[in-house]
Image 1 (spheres, one colour):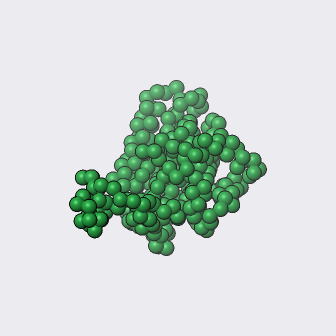
Image 2 (tube, rainbow, N blue to C red):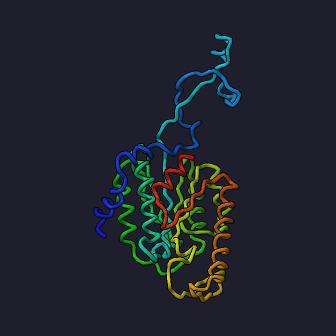
Image 3 (cartoon, rainbow, N blue to C red):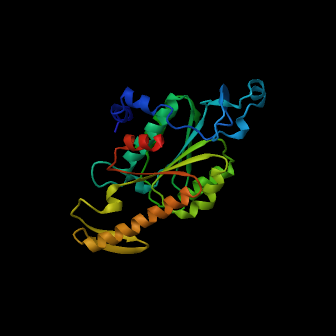
Length: 284
C-alpha cells in the first residue's frame, strides 16, 4: 500500500475528540526527575513525608505538602519486533496491521505531547534504529519501513532477548520503553529486569486471534506445538481445547513473569478495537 494512504487510513478513525481523550493519558514514572513546583496543600495521611514543607508548616501551625507538576519532556522508545511471523493473518487483519496501529496511536500521542520519539526495529539478526526526533517524520519513516520491509526467512526465538540485551549494553536510562512483539519467550526475565531498573517498560503482546483460538475456520492444519507437529481438523474439539489450554497457559506465564517485576503488560489481538483497548489500559 502507498505509505501516504496507509497513514491516512490509520488516521481516519482517530477523530480529534478521540485524540483529545488520549492526549497525555500515559505519564512517566520519572515524575521526581523532571518536575516543577505547583502549589501547597494541607497534608493527608497518604501523602509522602518527603513532600512536607516544614518552613510553611511552622509559619501556619498546619502541616503542608508541596504539589509538583510533571514536566512533559519524555524520551519514548518503541522496540518493535519485525520477525517473519508478524505478517501472519487469517481473516481481515494481520499482526503487522495491529503492530502499525499500536505504534501509530502511541507515537502520535507522544508527538502531540512534544516527546522525543525513537525506534528500534529488530528481528534477531540486525537492529534498525530511527534516532530521537520531536516531529511526525519519524513516525512516517517507521511505518514506511514496516510496509516495505522484505520477507525475513529466518526465525530467531531469542530475538527479543537480544534486543533488550543490546539496550542494556548501551546503558539506556530515563526512557519510557514500549516493546511491541508477539514473543512469549520467558528467557528475557533477567535482561528485562535489568532494563527496568533505569527505565519504565510497557510490553504489548500482539496476536492473530486465530493463532490463539483456532476458531472460525474450516481448514485442516499442521501446527508446531512444543516442537511436535500436531495435525488438527478444526472439527476436532478435543484437540482444539488442548491446544488453547497450552497456548493460554504460556501467555499467562509470560504475563506473570512481567507483572511480578512491575512491568506493565497488555494483550491485543486482531479481533479487538485497538484504540479502545489502549485507552482503557492507560486509564487504569
